Amino acid sequence: MPPSPRDRVWIDTHVHVIDSARWPMSSNKGYRANAAERGTAEELLACMDAHGITGAVVVQPSGYGTDHRALHDALARAPERLRGIGMVEAPTDVAALARQPGIVGLRLNVTDYDGGVLPRERLERLLGAAAEAGLLVQILASAEVLAGHADALASSSAPVVLDHLGSPRSGDGVAASAFEALCGLAARNPWIYAKLSAPFRIDASGAPWPEAAAVARRLLQAFGPERCIWGSDWPFIALGDAPRPAYADLLAWVDTAVGLHLEHVMSLTPQRLFGLTAAAA
Image (cartoon, rainbow, N blue to C red; front, side, top):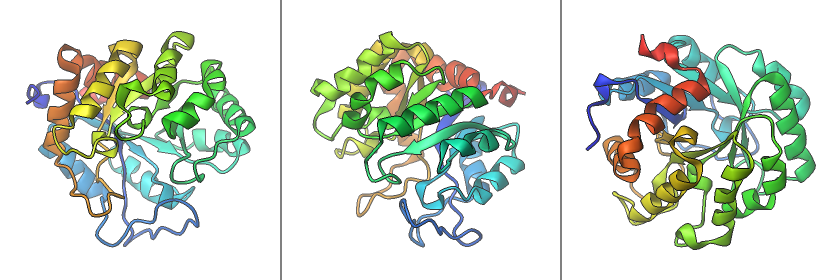
């Protein structure tokens, strides 16, 4: 098990707030959470407190689209502990997103929101708009899609975060050429970060997710602990019939996967990237 997080500033960089009772999901794109899939702001903060998590980054779920009411409500409840990642429909909307309190980044959910397609021109315009607005760009896409845009990502002046271990296909592991292309981005752009999150999304074997741990170690080798961060993906939606993971198991997984680099991955790097140093107070 990891050392007691209560002794340090631990950051979970990938959580969602889903409160369909107050804010129904009305987007015609993305994953629509069912009635049993919820994670309110109150439940998030309680989960953080129960596991000694100091701060968190709340990521807009695809089912809410650009309706940020649930996200804004969460950020207002604990502005010193939470930061937000929002969504836009067009590059011209990025500047307005950047002006919203607590928002530090823009999410591109290619997998669930954009049908797996990411046109190069759209990506380049969003990266440029984010850089101009001072936002980072967080991308959820398959390793193949990301590798296909390696040149655009390599030239980005906005920080880029690759979600969910770069999303290699289950069973491909570190051997896939697309995944190795992602690792190669580390040397091409110092502003690209790897998020060691949601191991259960790429490894169906269950805790302790050994295949995902191997992927995390390869990313850590490529990007270094100064450019790797951890996220749980709480409250663990869109899993079909698979059981939801235990938060404690995800803490144990990252401890095993990164070893002596835990403080960088869970504390120093995310504090710097997301501006959460105030969480230490």
